[in-house]
Length: 161
Image 1 (cartoon, rainbow, N blue to C red):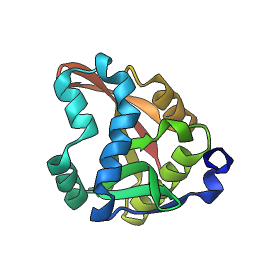
Image 2: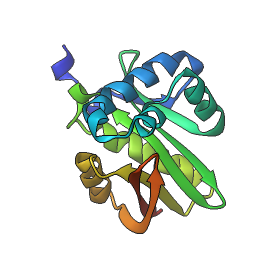
Image 3: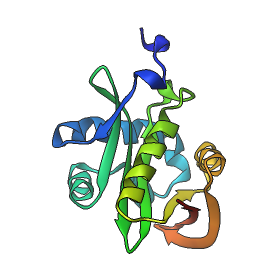
Image 4: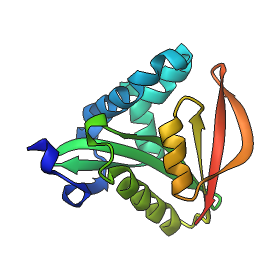
């Protein structure tokens, strides 16, 4: 039964091409409630397409959280010049509150540290208040950098690791 599972039942592993459809579903389901607060181009860039996910899979290290072979969460990270960057963190809503996001975050931070990163950044948008609270609880702080993300503000957060 789905309600009986906890983070302990979740396997965190590198994504494979076979996970692409499930990753796209995870991103779409997680971000669709915020779609009206995003510009159309910002939303498409957030939830990805087959093509943009393929590019991300080539450029970044993508992890998935799986339960009984089903993907229930995902995050991507890359390390460049000692600075890591996170993108595309999502957990299916029915699995919120079970520690899965924390498990994904810990795993991708460990990977980025192993690649030589001593700082990790991520970008988020103002509507994602739950995500912002989660990142702050896990040591991320606003850097002060705000850029235009297809017509909406994108806030940078950072954390030393």
